[in-house]
Length: 167
Image 1 (cartoon, one colour):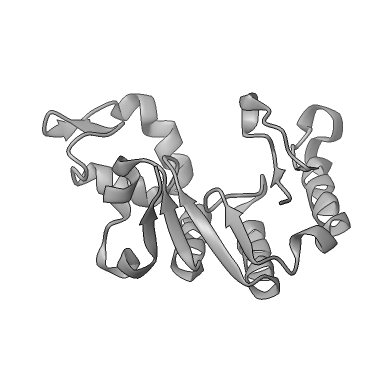
Image 2 (cartoon, rainbow, N blue to C red):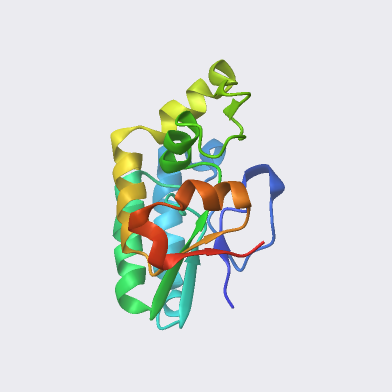
């Protein structure tokens, strides 16, 4: 198992390939440093039985880079699975419809915390990220939800055959 990650922001989780962007040190070049780390570790991320991406934006780069890297992983590995987590446009859309009846943004029959989540939601609804979510979600081999709330949001006809709930 090889874990390639940015450490999940402030959690600074352990990882084998560190993809943190050091904006203070490298500024705009930090994205190129991330790409360089990926290129240097291609031998570790190709030819695997299963690759899991955390969500649609699994590398701390712009959406189109994530799509490009996703297709590379898809064609150089046997299976690719995507986690279903709180930060993706599909969950926000479903929560706005009241699915599930309780969530970060919906409870008591109405939308909640809209002001608190406005900036976060605007980021995920940017066209480049929405397109990236669509590409990764529709072309992955499986979708894995770790919370029942996320499972309910992804429980739609286009995902039935590849959606799994693993608490």
